[in-house]
Length: 171
Image (tube, rainbow, N blue to C red; front, side, top):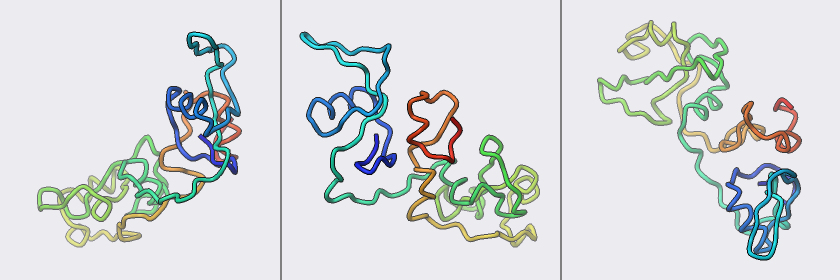
């Protein structure tokens, strides 16, 4: 789903996209030519990309949801102990205050760590392990614009989406 300015806003299922289209709130920008949705008296091509006609009036800022990928984005894809880049597929969470000592899993206690640093720190605080954080963990207000929290490129995404996800994504 795109905003009126053609910026990615959200991912929605085809049923929601059809509901918004039939109600006149969005236009279909791209559709799947080989897929058809039929009603009693009409047939529609299945929408792949839809766009709002106008901007939303009172767009509220959603809180960034806590997830592995969003912690990785917040930490710029780097281990917070050695500052080495960590591929998304190889990240590990590190609880700054270990869970065994009452540390919770949340924005203010979890950082991305490479496996060697996470194992070296073990069940200790960074001070006890003689390791220091690059940045203190905090809840982000937003994530980098090109990495919308709910819209991430994957190899299995449909080709019609690529032009709308920007240059940061492979085509």
